Image (cartoon, rainbow, N blue to C red; front, side, top):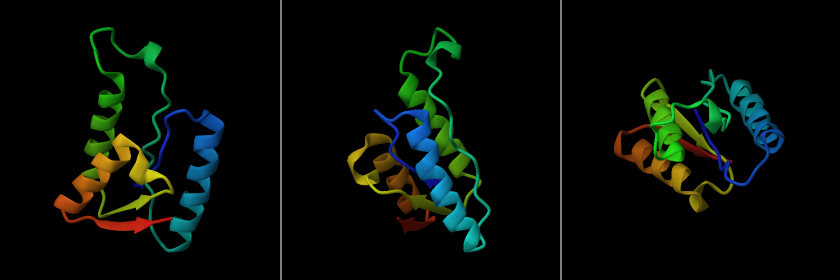
Length: 98
């Protein structure tokens, strides 16, 4: 799984960083789980009050299928990545860094 900062970035910027990380990880023999959820808040049910938290929940659910998480530069400055990092540590997943 890839954890990367997304706040304030365009989909193109996100995918550029993600594609680089995927290529690197696949080159090391990892199978990368696609956890990029485009921030299409308009397509979510209206009763979701905290949409960023919803997406974090999706990421954590996907993390349960992984044995390692790759953290892209800047992960330590964004709340979602920080929480994903803490979950990876607490649950014993291998952590790797860009």
